[in-house]
Image (cartoon, rainbow, N blue to C red; front, side):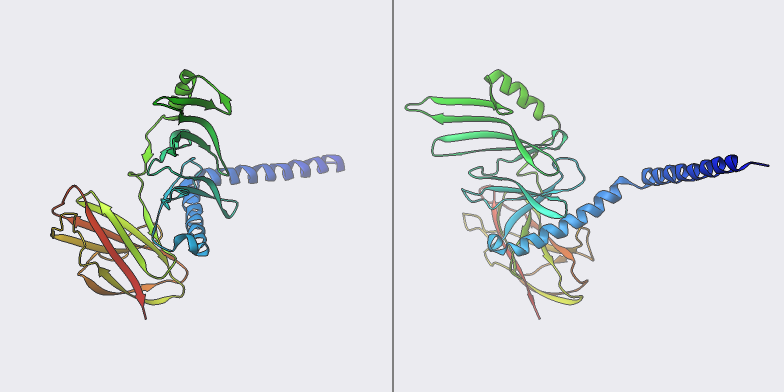
Length: 314
């Protein structure tokens, strides 16, 4: 029979053993729970936050604006890349951090120059104006983007350029700059053309205009529902749809598919005529996409014009 001291030690031992077992069990559960589930959940929250941010900043999105999503720094949250395309505001890059949409980078005069290296968490832009040019590399974390390398050049009097090289805030030689930049360019890169661009608008009408150089191309037009119920849409294809600069008419097809917030199809593709009326049953407060697939059998001068709109009606 145990004395009082032994009884106290036994109780403490059993209590410690239970706590230890509980900690081990929790750790095992976390290990068994797939990381992808956490990432998917966080991205769903971020996607909704991005869309709400766009609606609140409607003056920026008074026309269709290309927006792409990519996890630049491998933290499981996709960043939002906005391409207004203006001279003073060519690209804006945002992230979702601590429950808020936060701007990481804003650059101008950098038309279609973006390159992203996810394996090194690096963002690159090249641009210039009025004789001043730059190549800039950013390191991206979950909360900020920091310039780590920059090459600038300016045309002096005459044909020569004055080049400057900076790495982590320090002026360096061209050789040291090139060596450091090479370390940032590891792995496959995403360019402007290889990103999937979605087209957002602030109004109820979803519009799409583009000069396309591919025989087949896919676009995504995003919108959100308010209340659950039946939503009716008209689609309109410009009569000059797929006319190139030579004004030739082509045999073309336009397919439309409703998708969920993960761009997974809901229902079958609809092949559109010039004007169509469509109806969908939608849930409340959800983000949806219209997937638009354009197919052109003949092209002129390597490109053709896309002009398409969808607008709701009651």
